[in-house]
Amino acid sequence: MLGFRRSIAVLGLAVSCVLGQDSRPKGVHPRATPDDYAVKATGHAATYAASLVPADQAKHLFAFDITGKYLVFEIACFPQENRPLQVDPDDFLLKRDKGELTHETEPSAVALAIQLQNSPRPQESRGNTQVATEAQVGYESGRDPVTGRRVSGVYEGVGVGVEHGGVDQRPPDYPKPGGTPDDRRVLETQLQERQLPTGKFDHAVAGYLYYLRASVKKDSAGNYALQHLGETSGAGVSETVELVVPAKIR
Image (tube, rainbow, N blue to C red; front, side):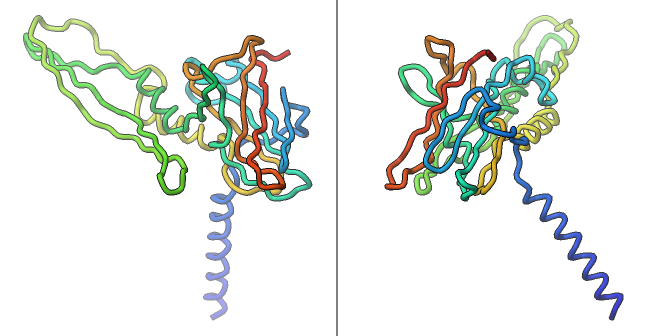
């Protein structure tokens, strides 16, 4: 009986360790104070801080370089008086043309875009007929009509095209780094692990958010206008906190 109890205790400890690892918030370690970031702004429930990670630094954060397509922002949230704060990456938006706002790009979509960018189009020659296969991988995103939260997913398919003509003498193309399904999974995991975490926190949290370069625009002074839309004031009025993030470190 004693041995059985010990086995149960060991099993319980192992399960607790696993659950503890899974429940740890993701993101990056927050800097000591909001002043350690390029900009900060205080709302009703928290002080928010942000910096644009320079491309020459961001390209070394992950296994594969995403800086050709995406901007990487480091965001931190410091709750007021250690009161619980609801944090959600979806609440941070960047201004684009004509005053419109754009959400961050989810890690799965970033990793997919990098894979497609670095994947060759496979071709197979059969005598005088050239058969080209094309992997069709896409990303769909929308909003749940009930909850208003974003839902998304990756879809895949294969297309085949036939072209008659001479034998293709070109050597086969190989994927560039980041261009295979395995590369995509590795990159997606890294992006997710370092993304600003989602949840309710009574302590400072920080992480990265990824924005499509082609979707955002700097203002006349060379800054990015980042807005947080998730707060409400003490009177229950929706509150916007704006962070004017310089594109260059001063």
